[in-house]
Each structure stands twice: as structure tokens, then as C-alpha cells.
Amino acid sequence: MERIPDKLPAHIAVIMDGNGRWATARNLPRTAGHRAGADAVRIIVGECAKIGIGYLTLYAFSSENWARPRAEISALFGLLVEFLGKETPRLVEQNIKLNVIGDIAALPAPSRLALGHAMTRTASGSRMVLNLALNYGGRDEILRAARALVRDGLKPDQITGQSLAERLYTAGQPDPDLLIRTSGEKRLSNFLLWQCAYSELYFTRVLWPDFDAQRLHKALQAYAARKRRFGGTEEAIIPEA
Ligand code: FPP
Image (tube, rainbow, N blue to C red; front, side):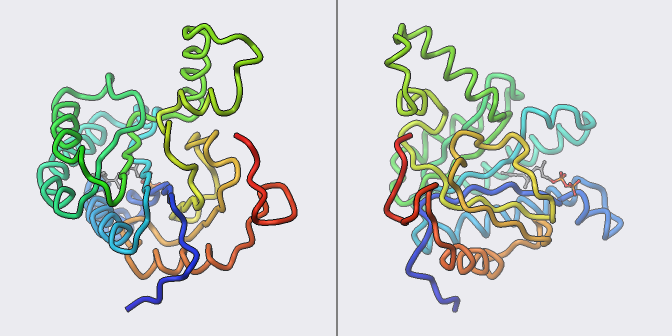
């Protein structure tokens, strides 16, 4: 049993990187890496809900991922549909609410359908919110919020951090306290650019398919040992959005 630190993040965001390398190292096609990655998603979602994380945001498909080979893209969305079919009953059981962040209008129809179904079935989940970032880009999200501010007729002095944040996909949710990126890359890759302004960043060389409950707990221990200052001198100072 892992010891759960007293100081847990309310919101964890994860850049799940390294599926392709995991597969290549085993002489397997990249899609086998994504399949193993989906297993890791199931494990980490369950563990986060179990220990009391309120929000978990997973970067499943970025707006830049369309540049990948067509076969890989369709395998990824096929996997998503399969995952939702299998996991939705478990999400309901675990009292987890599924939410999508990103521009889902551009997703293949079967994925949109499966997501709509899973979101409806999990709508009353109150233990944890699972945000799946799909066709998501951080700059695009901020641009959309800026357009919404104009569309809603706000005057320049009514445009505040709060009024902008209310127009992001994550409206009403706390910002991530901890951002994890696997596979040794140390970049944000256009993920939650606004929301991660003060997040603690945790990078590990472990490839996403190998990221398990034990690795998650290691990240949580590292987070618990960090002193958060939010630009001030004391932990208590949280800047206005
Ligand atoms: C990065 O690995 C991973 C992705 C682009 C997709 C993430 C998808 C999954 C974890 C599986 C499906 C998800 C769900 C929710 C069912 P990479 O391909 O960039 O790896 P590489 O950098 O080693 O090539």
C-alpha cells in the first residue's frame, strides 16, 4: 500500500507521452503502444479517483496530432470508442464524471457519438471529473475565449482574468496544481497554457504505458515536498486570476 501524502493536488493534468517509443522498443506497431497507453489511462483514472483527486485532465489528442499518419489517427479514435464502450460502466460505478475539453466538432462521428453517450451516462458523477482533452490546443482555447468576450459585449475594463477563465473549456474548475509529463520531454506542447500558470511541473522519463499507480504516487510525493509560492513569498498568497 502506498502512503498517501497529506497534501494532495485537487487537479492533476497529464501529458501522456511515449506510447510510440514504448512500442518501437518492443518491435511493435505504434498502435500497440497506444493500446498499452489506454490501459495506463484506466489504471491512473481508477487510482486518482480512489485517493481523492477531484479533477484529472488527460491530453489524449492535441490539435497538432492531425499531422500524424491517417492510419494512426483512425486507430487512436477507434481505441477511444473501444475504451469508452468498456470503461463507461466502470466510470459510473466509480462515480466519475466524464467531460471533454477541445473542439470535438471535428472528431470522427463514432467518437462524437460515444463521447456524448459516455458524458450523458456519467453526468451525475460527483467523486472526480475526468477531462479528456481531444482536438485540444491551449492557444486556440484562449483565442476562443477572447472571441466569446467580444461576442458577449464585454467592455475593456470588464475583461478580467476571471471573465476570460469563465470562457475556457475548464470554466468552473480549479487550475491544475500538478502537471505530469511522461517520456522525458520537457515541454508544455500547447497544453492548458492559461490554467498551468502556477502549476507544479513534474517530468519523468517513464514512458506513458509504464506509468502505473506506483509511479503516480512517486509524483504525488514529489508534489507534496514542493513549496508553492504563486509568485509571492508564502503559500497562502494565491493571485487573482
Ligand atoms: C503520445 O505518445 C500519446 C498520444 C498522442 C495519444 C495518447 C493516447 C493514449 C494514451 C491512448 C488512448 C487514450 C484514451 C483515452 C483511450 P506518442 O505517440 O507521441 O509517443 P512517442 O513520442 O514515443 O512517439
